[in-house]
Image (cartoon, rainbow, N blue to C red; front, side, top):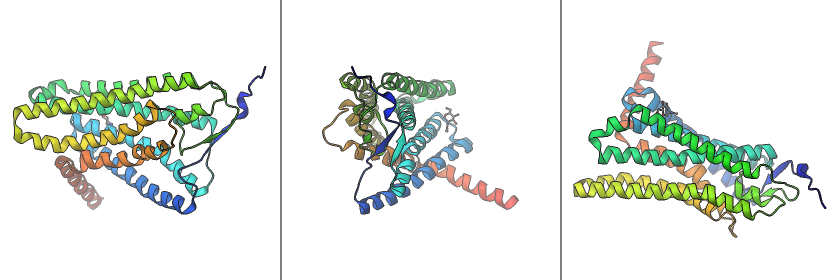
Length: 312
Ligand SMILES: *[C@@H]1O[C@H](CO)[C@@H](O)[C@H](O)[C@H]1NC(C)=O
């Protein structure tokens, strides 16, 4: 009998998004510009909501938290990708890979629950406006937020507990630019069928479940608005359609990667760009920069900063 040598694989090699140098240079420029925009845009949202007293309402607190998670999600993968593209040195240690998977699932799980919380917030605001302040109290906000983080954490721990002891002895190339379960599991030298099922059951279920829940709540809100007045429908629809777009862009790749964890074509790594570079940019634009109150708050903040500079 062979006793597998578990410690043989100490690092993984990313194959990255492209091997052709000009394409790599394009990706390098593209992801650098996007990452800087993501950091500035989301920090702007967090600071504006934190420092403007007029924005201390449940909706904006949830938004700021969403921006914070988006920022972390990008930071988890994009800077490493940029530095790999820059240096051509595309390795990650075994521990680094496991940590990346763990944090990725904590953040991803929390973001999904947070999106549901935000839909709930819009539902109460639009369908039960008179009870908005009593239902969406600050306790409720904190409850939703801690719920989101707790679910993300439990989801991630539950998944990693299965895979952290898998034996790795053979190939160590990951056909992507970051570590995630489908690729990680594929490299283990053991029968991965049960692991595949476990990923589908856990990550797949969470992504599909929250996606369907979100679609149902948006349809519910639209129907309620439509019943009340046909004039309000177009306004509600224009707001909600932006939310629905982001939701589809965010959940599409997740569902593709986790519900069919072992696809035959490797488009999943390109789809991941949507989650790490596109939705983190769209969220601040759609939820906040198009929002009148938010724009006013930014103007106020800007003039306060100017005043401070004049005083000092
Ligand atoms: C998240 O929301 C809580 C309250 O609901 C708020 O106190 C906190 O500042 C928010 N976090 C960020 C990063 O804005």
